[in-house]
Length: 252
Image (tube, rainbow, N blue to C red; front, side, top):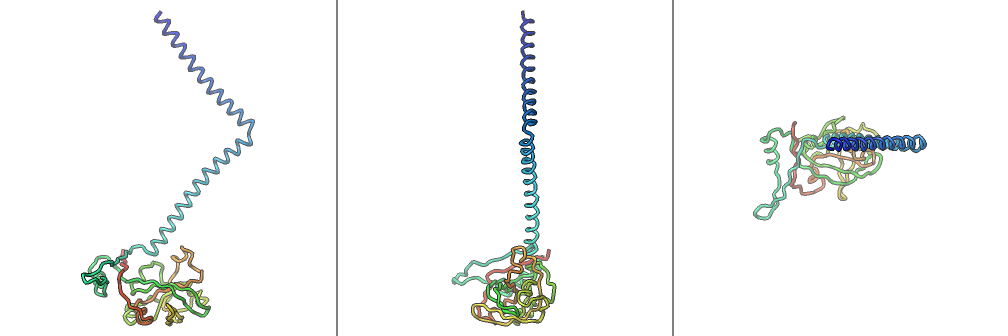
């Protein structure tokens, strides 16, 4: 009796397994029949899946490429530098500011420092042969040259001597030269820079390649980009200059 029971149980299990496999094959046959009877719909479905997967892969690839490009441009603009801010006040309530001695000490005593400079930015207007245009000017010491890694492609950068004598010289970008004068052969030429209603004449001593401005869509838009000695703010425009923040550039 026991053996018969075991045999019947074995047959029962075999029957269930066979039935399951039969159902699977039936499902496969039905699926194949549906595909054959609806070839157009099946092809469109497959195309949709393929296009969807391809689109995702393409978007990821483009995103990675754009990310890499932007990171490269950002590094070219501001790689290897830190900003130091003073927002403290002394015991008598006056604001703590950086001095020339502080900047010299940082450059001389801190390892791997290439340049130290204050940095002030203003929006004004520049007038050249082609007319008057909006202008953004960054003022600093000679070390400002290294805060942007786009190279000087014509002329030179302003020097420490230009800074200490408040010499009204400047560096502009390629696109700025074309905006003001129509070409880049502008070394030694001058233009008027107006800030808060006061106008001073600046002489161009250098041209900087402007990859950074093109990244943000600024190149060729009619906006002039200028770099000049910060001492010209107080000497030419009568501003009282205090150094509450510094840019420190590494030599690595």
